[in-house]
Length: 325
Ligand code: SF4
Image 1 (cartoon, rainbow, N blue to C red):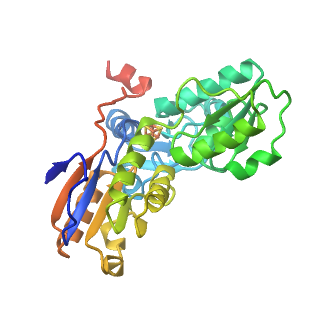
Image 2 (cartoon, helix red, strand yellow):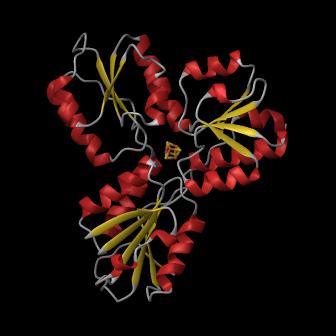
């Protein structure tokens, strides 16, 4: 495998694969999956997990085999049992419900989601109207909104901006879901700034480093590939955004697949260069399967296209750290 920091000057060769880097698991997903495994190891099965720990079919099925039980609501967990909250975060009411059922909780909310929760609490305490850019119904948006439901209004794209009502136009702030498309979010922010010239911005980016880095990398490979394959699940927000970013960057076709066997051979017709990447919740073993599938069809010249180095790691949730000590 060669490492190609820049594609300028390279010539397309038949059967080439451009492999994006960074891709795949981020620090928050790594921590959440490890938290379930450690909880199973320390307490034994079953460990209940509220919502899919991360939005990936393969990961969920693997953990189910080890003894994790996935539920959608807290009242599905037997009283007194152990429940782990997913990387997407939960509203404070979920903690209250868990306490009422005497559940032992382990909170695997990604620290970068927790950061957005804290911003929401802080701006609500200062009586701001908070415009949360995100996708309606997404687990993370539900959790963040739950921190300050009376102060937060969801903005699901520039189309929502004209209909917004706020109490005081001098006290309005925007926040965002962590896994959005950077370019689309900026379009929404521009529309908000036009509507509310005194709009306050968050102190730092809410879209996380992993989503941003994966979008930059997929953009780079999409400029030079006729087909882009993103490995990830359909309910994974950041993976879906990567497919959209690839299409916008100019590739002829971009598809999201959970597994190699979902790839349709007809996608390869007339394609000499395939771009390959994976969402922040997809493990690399699934990318290896796709590489194998492509190699069997003559795409065995693999070039890694690196646009950033990542070294971020997060410590395990404190409940598991205490137990380990
Ligand atoms: Fe955290 Fe970003 Fe990974 Fe989500 S995608 S778990 S916010 S690092």
